[in-house]
Image 1 (cartoon, helix red, strand yellow):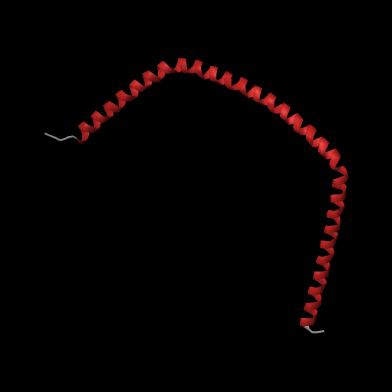
Image 2: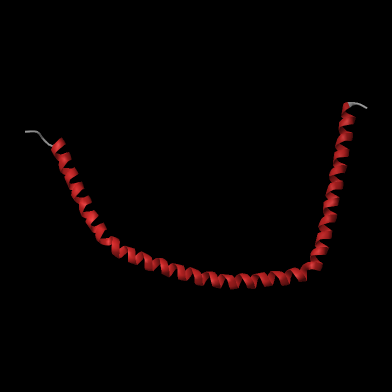
Amino acid sequence: MNQTEKFMEEQKSTAKEIEKVLKEIGDKIEELVKKGADAGLDVKEEVENKIQELKKNKTTLEEELKKGKALLEREFNERKEEIEPKLRESKGFFLEGFKQFGLALKALFGKKN
């Protein structure tokens, strides 16, 4: 047997193995489809129960989210009232510092007499 014939024989063998594996996969898929059809009613009922449970939990979570949001808003407003005077004061210091910086640059780079 020459190399070409040997190579062709190996290719045929590989092709047959692939066909065998594909057939096995197809058989397993058919088996799963049949099992799925049998179990379909049970699964459908279970899925519907899960959906109802999730809808119920969603409502509960939405209520908790609203409570949490209200709490955060209240906390934010309380802190805002405490911090706002300090922010205004800091803003004044910042503006004054910026003004002084500008004057320092003007003095440094301004015209010399």
